[in-house]
Length: 79
Image (cartoon, rainbow, N blue to C red; front, side):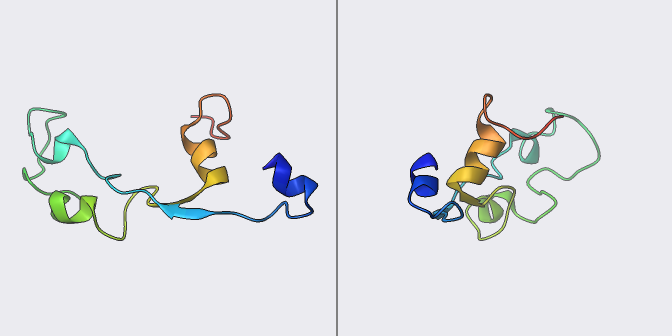
């Protein structure tokens, strides 16, 4: 990102898709975090379909947003 800024292109981004962001054992195993949900379902539908589909948590990212979400040192979140 520093290189892009030095080249006068600070807002250039490279977007990419992250597959498998909905993989969560809770959708398949009711013993994990028990509640009233039906095994084999999630809030977006069939977990196997949703896990590789076009929607989901953090599915589309840029290099900057990826670092912000997953980098312990560079995250902008405060939870």
